Image (cartoon, rainbow, N blue to C red; front, side, top):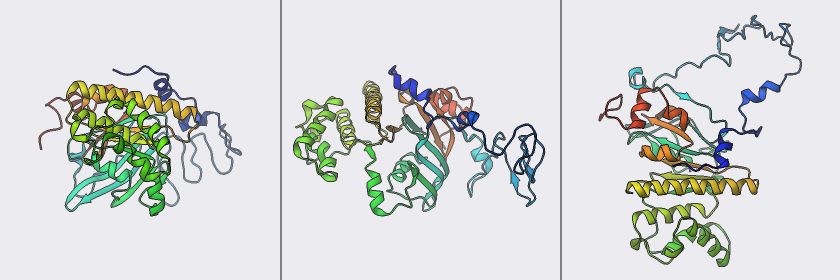
Amino acid sequence: MRFDTDDDDEMRGNDDPATTPAAERDDDTHDDGAETNGVETNGVETNGVETNGVETNGAPTESESGSRVWVVDEEPPRPGPPPGADEDEYKWHTYKVYPSGRPDAVEFIDTYKSFGRSHILRGLNMGLPEGMVSMILGPSGTGKSVCIKHMVGLLYPDEGDILVHGESVPNMPDNELFDMRKKFGLLFQDGALFGSMNVYDNVAFPLRQHTEKGEDEIEDIVMRRLKEVGLADAAGKMPNELSGGMRKRAGFARALVLEPDIVLFDEPDSGLDPVRTALLGELILEIHRDMMEEAKQKQKEHLPTFCVITHDIMSARRVADYINVLWKGRIVEAGPAEDMLNSDNPFIRQFLSGESQGPLSMD
């Protein structure tokens, strides 16, 4: 079940010029010194006649230097397979990206990562749109959790780049990297609570570690977050007294106390029964909605971005605004959930419907 909120409408129909696609904004923009009636201006003609070796009628041409030039309305060439792979291995990768209408909070650019002879990311290009609940879906062992470690600078790519709000993570000095990590909240698979601390102290830990807030202010923040996740009455319990779902909710509360711009969920539904998985999905949506409202009221620079890594297709249908499907270290297709759930790509259709017949096998 999805929440019917104004925020959902705003995500899909945003009139903010900062987040309006460039093609729409350019309709009302005219370059000085250029005409569109076929008259050459500043050495550029716009009626399809070749000027300075470049044609503008939608076809690639060769310039005087012999290089190929592709114009905006021409579909980009299909990327070749990664080194050591053949084209047939990536035949289901269309690399199609449906527009989200928002800038990317996190962006992977031609990212490669290997561990010994195991090639995990193999030229990954992927974005997480700002202000949305994005999901990274894909078969086991395809590099989903490795992506999270690259986002926060725990791993560095062998090649390529990762941008967080436009800043290159691999090129950050240590002090900037430490500050950048405060933008993130992370919910680990099992909650990752400290076994020697009760729930309250676990949730308060980031505030005591990274801020100079007094205990009264810390108590207000911790109890507010615990109340949001339904654990206000469990503040004094130890982790071994909690169920699996309660541990995950406590980890969720801890991920929120520093008011992060980006919250990452590494398989939050693992080990949960279907009902608690659905309830956790609704909680994620509800808290994202509340954070969106708060960010707009406070006029924050960035809207809250959630990224969920999961195998659960029902969670994707309930929760996701945007879906990236990752396989063999590259994106097969990506786009708003509605576009992806209606994709005609055989691999996407097989994976999102959980069918046994299709391109994906046990190999």
